[in-house]
Image (cartoon, rainbow, N blue to C red):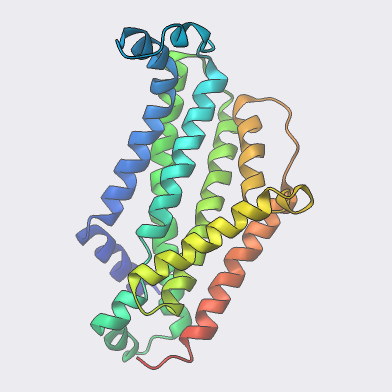
Length: 252
């Protein structure tokens, strides 16, 4: 497993996907509190902004900064969680790399697990660096939020992204092209979004964790979403198991 993990990290590094993930998440983690602070100033200085718009905008505060931060991290994290791993299996299958790797004493379960762990650790590093930067700029421009709550909120965002990574890994196993894999992952994301609008179902879906995390980051009471967290972990395990069940039947 250590050799497989090193192989995956080497590929992520050589293809710049590790650095791109780190850079994008960090940049938009910083942009959240910065845009919340200076957007009213920017709007008031623009000539083509409708008159009075800047005046009716609410004064920027720490809650707005946290909303912008988490929104940016989730929005661009979702894009990366689909685009970065979408070729992880289908690309190696098409190039013949998977066949070479599996010709050695490597199980298909280890092959897939190493990929998930490599991408998971990559996004963990990205969220961690983005969190440090976002926390610093929020405290610098507004006020310092509770560190434990902020850490918990980022952990929940990471779990949400891990769900999409696992789903994309499954899609890459099922699909015959990278584009098809991305389309499958987007379809699952859209389905979860539609189901999330149904109150009896939405509170059990991964997005419910994000609302919980928003309250934790600000240190205010919020309805816990332990059920959504449990469902998210179950979805990750189910997607990985399904990917293995499909991949073990495929001819390379």
